[in-house]
Image (tube, rainbow, N blue to C red; front, side):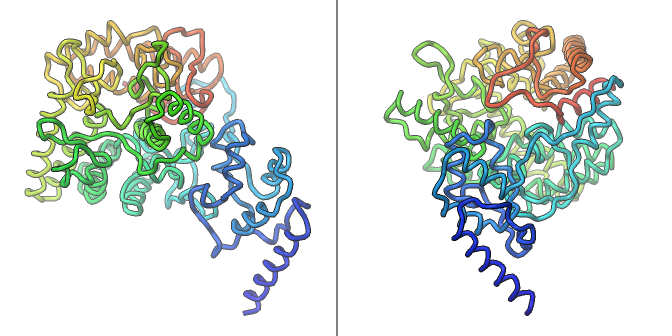
Length: 540
């Protein structure tokens, strides 16, 4: 009772202090957030007007910085105190933030050394590892087990990144870490019904490419195939998330992430359940929406926000895959229409999820489920081949279901049907020819052949797509081309490392003297999936 009276009296004194000053001295450290006062919410709900003023006022160069801050005091009192500020200049807001929050930085201590690149990566696992999270106010969704983050501005776990990271963890014998990460994703599925983009509240409207089944397979490689059955409930829950609304598409063309094709088959698209600016890219999205609506007054800003968010769910944020050309014949982000596109990579991943559930059910002895999901996978495979194979181009491409036509965009998403062995042998030969003709560059394979200024286009190459391409080609006997891509990519990684002692998020594969670029933020150092793919490829 005495402690309760003390805290109530302390809060009253703090409120009186707020009324007597604007910013004032550093708040008393004894007034730290109490466990029962912990608030874990999206940043606009947590911080109210402060969030909007910070993001629109460009207080931080990177819009992600403020949404990752950690409140050092009761969040309700922070909101109250901010609302009483008379001075809301940039300087005043900046000082307020310093007094009330722990501001994140790229707090990764990468030691510059001249060790071998593989030894350097093994050391990096400890640098990139985060312990099980404590429950504190802010946007971080606490996870029960340790995990690996990508690095740089990416201070939390990311969904599809983690599969490629696990490839290297497996190679380096970090089985316990793999198990912990798979369990964290299972926890998120059970807690939220799906795996968010990352463990932040501002990611709760969307997921990312569904690689959870592939992660379970990595763990099964280390611990035995019975692992598949262990995670069968979570695999099914994730599948239900992606297929939500499929049963009710009789009178609808699309709902959330499901799309009814012209022949009645069901495929999927990327989506986000919110139609507002992304909190972590707030001012950028507002500017993009304003530009889009000024060009096309019939368009709503909400449509633009939804498409930007769906592009983020795809992991390819952003790419010519989701864009049209403007009046100057240039790809323009304000033309984004992700939700119109049925992506070939997403549907290949969901085919794999269906097949994995079938295999897991067989191990569990559930023959009825085996038959159900085998049929689902066969139906999806047939629909993928019908709508995504461009016979004229000799390549797999995305499909615009609004226009009832295939897009004309070449991208490495078209290699996913080879990675998951959906393609015929003849189709694989066409894909291999196009990889050699269009995508093969001095540093590996380029994401798309289009130089748009977006990071998931030329001249950039990304570790996950090198892996998908190499393994896809090997599945169809093109070891020669796969080996050439592997050699060029590893050499590029080693060359950059020897010059900078860094592992990067992405690389310029066209001009090896230049750094990668494009997108909403600078190239990041770390870097989880680059490390994982390098360890795996360099050991084969």
